[in-house]
Image 1 (cartoon, rainbow, N blue to C red):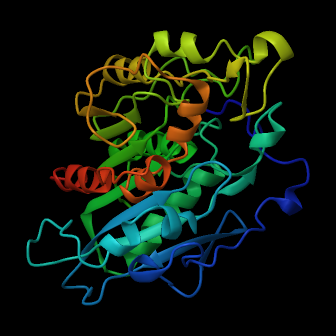
Image 2 (spheres, rainbow, N blue to C red):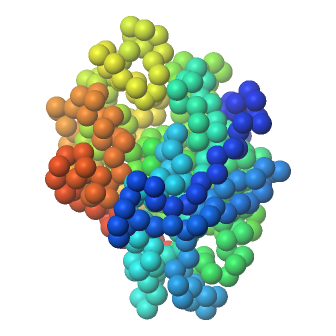
Length: 358
């Protein structure tokens, strides 16, 4: 049930839903630039919400495609999917469907609401509310209701293989992806649909507090139970830290000196690591507190190679740089001057393994 209904809402609601994505590449040129020409709208709880959508040619009610919904990180937009990831290109012909004759997938990139984190003005902006925890179906949480309605409306077109409804999120979008996947794998949307599997990149525990020592606490005492397949990809050096030892190393933390620091900025004293942002602990809680036996943790280094342990050389600057890099190979090349692994392939291949059986 709810922590506080309006915990993350701006004082002036009129400014809350103003950004409208254009659904095209801005900084990207050449073969990977894509333009879907306009955003789509859906009205949920009296508010107009925006999203971008791409449907591969040949998608019909008899040739349905998997649905993948991508969630941007805090402070970014639905257009980020076009400029930072290679998912829009892959959506044209990637073999995600369980039907081997069908290529491509139905891709949606959503626009978060403008929200405010308590005492964190620098983090205010496009985001998702996983602290107001009305997990019911239907829900009074505006973001849960939005994703419920978006999925149900998209399925109503007849173009979606309902066995393959997937979500993928980055940072705060990854928090919400795991949150929503956990609740909507077990309990159907109002329209009767379920999430088959999710991928979360560089994200942590959505059932924790937004800030330390919050009173009253929003930490959820009893986590919902779910066996939704979850692939969690994180860096061996990240502001969503690998383990407690890494947190101690990079988060000597400005708050010990200056009070509560802005997020995600760092200073000479360290970088802020929030409650629930220790991946090893979150993986343990997924297995023990959520009861999930289908969670997989893929730990990678700066260029996307799988590693077995956290980096002992991690600094606050390196951690922030890794967190702000989407793992499609191209981003690695820009940051490290070397072509990295395209982990979107790992993400899509993982999702494909887990269509709903019933």
